[in-house]
Image (cartoon, rainbow, N blue to C red; front, side, top):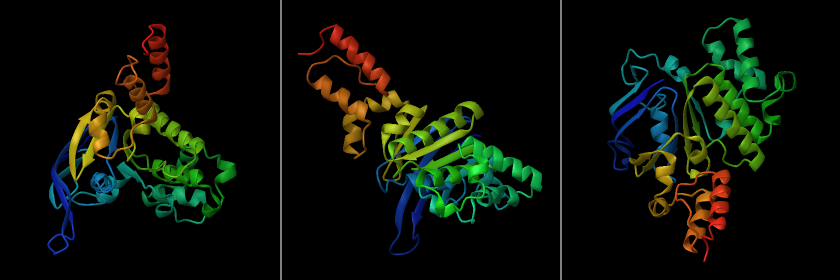
Length: 287
């Protein structure tokens, strides 16, 4: 599903003495099936920007076009649009509200006026997609879930509406390494096997650099970088100046280069780092 913004600007408390510009004249395009990492420091405007992409916010200035639909057009069905562009919040407690997992996941399809059999089928499929066993979790109390399970249930609730695009807002924050890896694996499979357009919001490059095909960096309400992950990671000094947390692999490789090892500057994963370090050692690349 293609999404485009044209000269998008937005301010909180607009027209008051407390007006604060959050987005400034943003032009952005994402193609159908792309996986984009949307990165920025705290209060950079990245979440406000992303929430314009599924019409949680309506533009004050400029336009947002989602699959040919203008979100500001009074004739646009915003409920339909939000089902097409699903949004998963950072805190699953903002999204989960029904007593049980099954009821919560069924809420969206029921609002799509689907018959009970189709709703039940979508609940089963969505739970399977996120690794929640139907028999174990369908009737489980929402508040009895762990943090990772809540995030899975929140994703499943969005997937049950069969979106064409998925916006994921810092959804691995607070998870232990295993829980984080499980969520990232699910996202990767959804993109790879179902060609769902993914917009992955984070303040860290670590996850997006490995998963995303393209990274967009927002700072002070403006897009300041938009490129492939390897090209972005070569700009270490600029990223550090912005206060962005660099991938651990990038920091290790930078330290090794400083002590004399001849290593590439665009390494994005552990496997590549191991291969590059092994090659450097064979060549006697250290001092």
